[in-house]
Length: 209
Image (cartoon, rainbow, N blue to C red):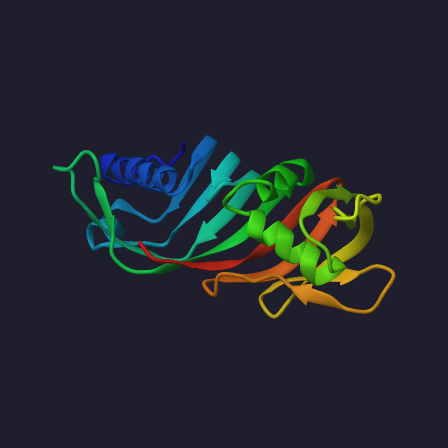
C-alpha cells in the first residue's frame, strides 16, 4: 500500500480503503493504493480518486492475474473510533481500467459451481452441445471443446472476441454467428482482446458502497 505523505488523515483513509477492497474480494495477493487529494479536502468528505494496482486477485471466484483501476471522486467520512471500519463510503462511484485473466485459470473457474453455467451457456449457444469440456486461449484465438454424449471424439471450435454493446461478443472464426455474453448492467466493457494466453478487458463499473 502506498499513499502521498499528507499526514495521518490520508493514511487512515488508505488503510480503510484497503480493508474495504480486500473485503470485496475472495483474496488479494498484492495490493497497492495511491490516493489523489488532500487531507483538507478529505475533512470535507471528498477525495479526487484512488488508483489501484493489484495482482493475483480472486473476485467472485474469478481469478485475475492483475487489475489496474482508477476511481472517480469519492465521498467518504472518517470514523476513527471504529477500527474495523474507519472509513464509510457514502455514495456510488465509478471505476475504470483494465483487468487481465489467464486462460488456464479461466478454464478452471468455468468448471466451478459458481461459473459452470457460463461455460455451458457458451458451449450450448456456440456449439449446440453441453457440457463444456474445456476452454483455452491460443494467442488471439479462443478455443472451446465440448463433449459428445454418444461417446464420439469431443468437438473443437475456434472463436474471436471483441467488445460490443457494453459486453463481450464471441464470434466463430470459420462460420457465421456468435453471441453476447450476459453481463452485469453495472459493468460496461469497452475493449476485449486475447493475447499470449490471456484475456484483457478494459471498461467501467458502477460500485455501490
